[in-house]
Structure formats: structure tokens, C-alpha cells
Length: 166
Image (cartoon, rainbow, N blue to C red; front, side, top):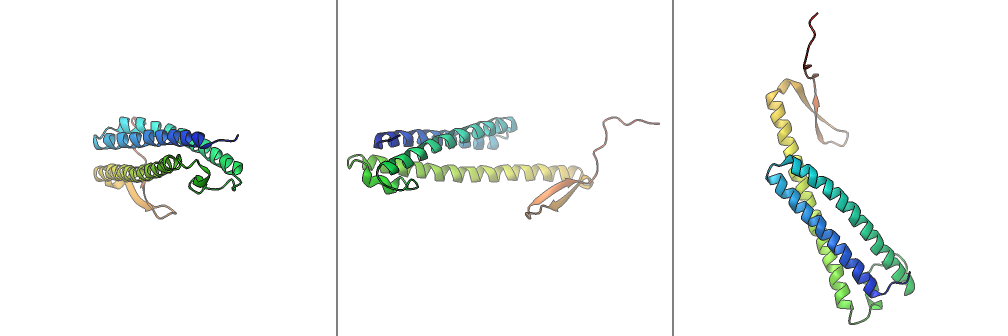
């Protein structure tokens, strides 16, 4: 494999599309969270997992192309694409640089939105646990995990639906 800059640009465009798809799914998840739609959140979470797998494959293909491009130009296979820009045709450098920049911007947006959605999900679970503790305070005990995070443990076994009298 001896890719040229056009192959790299197409690979970056494909990666941009996948990051855009992931960003859209996180935005959809957020709207489902605000709409208090647990089924929608669950469905979107499954879609997010599938999109992350696709993105991982796309990124792997791009990294392989960059390594091959680097090797073809006498650079180490671990060279970054930005460091390889001098090996790209002069008139194409702004395009490739812009694609690299846009991928990086989308990565930051996806990470920020993922952290925000995670915080919303954590808060929803905590709120649900608070409600359960308010309804049945004797049934739950707050503990801490080995990592120092709060956890809620059931202190008593829930009553059986049917109890046999004997």
C-alpha cells in the first residue's frame, strides 16, 4: 500500500463523517434525556456503541494509511499526519491541514458532549435512587466502592410476591 495525499484526504473525510454521526447520536441522546424518554435513551445508547465501533475501524484504516504514507516518504510509521504535511503537494496542504483540524475539533466536541451526557445519566440514576430511598428508607444503604464512589446496596430482601402460609 502506497497511499498518496488524495487517499489520506478521503480517509479523513470518512472519519469526519463518522465523528459527525457520533456527535449527532450524542445530541439525540441528550434530547431523549431531557424528554425523560428512557426507552429512547437506551436505543440511542445502543446506536452510540455501534457508531463507536465503526469510528474505531475508520480511524484504524486512517492510521494504517498514514503509517504507509510515512514509510513511503522515509518517515517513521509513528509520524503524525501533521508532521507529514511537507510531503503533501503544496496546493493540497491547506486542504489536508483543514481536514486534520476539523477532525480534531469534532473529537473535542464529541468528548465534551459525551462527558455532559454522562453527567446527566449519573444525575438521573442518583435521582432515581434518592426517590427509592425516600419511598423505602430501610431497604437501602449508601456505601462506597473500592474506588471511593458512592454505591447503593439493598439492605433487605424485597418481599416475595406470594408468601406461603403454613
